Length: 436
Image (cartoon, rainbow, N blue to C red; front, side, top):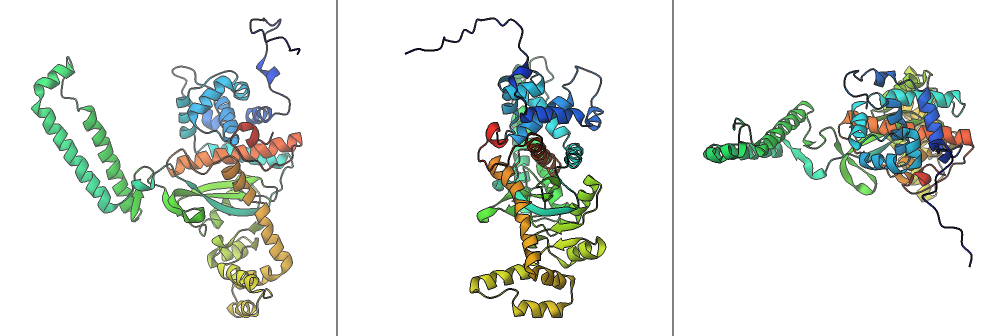
């Protein structure tokens, strides 16, 4: 049997190779490189000091992070390794290798500035004709916080922990005073009166417990998580209750995300107005049509949408949904006489919306939101595996979610530029995630 010659690793090349030669035309990495170079990153750049060692350029770190988040890769150590071994990361970083701590600090420090980057990507989607503005669908989904449920404590439990920590500190100090000679031997030329390491750790813990107790009292909450005090218990799918954040997304019919947020409220009922305002702020265009499920429905939200903003809204109330399910289960025609009678007697905006959605054409329009907004969370949570956050605090998780949303929109731009068709893929490798 004939074989090809074995690879000769000692063979020298006539001309030195370029990393560009190894990245094929039309790859997502080239699209990210091109777009990030066009973005205005002065809000980030201006926060760097001219003193000290020159820093990695923010555009390079943004390219690497956006590609990583679009690939289902978030761990800073794995991103550092990818910059050493993965051709596409090496291409985006220009062969530079930021260490994991640099990547992690950049992501934390500029969490607020991510929203500005996201807005620029949204406007680029509009300029390219990938999406139209004015019509949006809203939805919310829970992503777990980086905090254990066991670390959620009541006021009494926190006070008990504080008493125990204080007792441990006093005991450690008493033991330290009793062994002066041993301390002199251990500390050598130092003063010998520095707090032992274990006591310093306990004092830091005591300070954190005190901060958690104050937050509990200020927010008038029954419980607070000691790891991430801003995360709240929320019910996920299948009834699982864990510390989490409620992630809000507004998307166009073309599945382009035009606004996002992470909130501490488990329900969506207070999020319709702020999300509509965010969409208009991000895009500079008025929202004309909104589709949302019954989780957003309230008399106040109907008044805001219909009377204040003059929005064509498709949002059933819970009573409408319940009645429709009953009719379907019992094989009855819909709308039922009971629903029509109730709508005629209520004389409210909710009743008007019920009548509107009772028309089959309008109800089909409402149901279209399933194909406009739900695939967004489907891709983020099931294709990329984003079911929990790595960072802590509402500010930082919002920045992390912003990276997910910006990377998602970059995927839409890449598919539009290269003519790639949408694929439903499952997996966390960068090839599967980008659908190549």
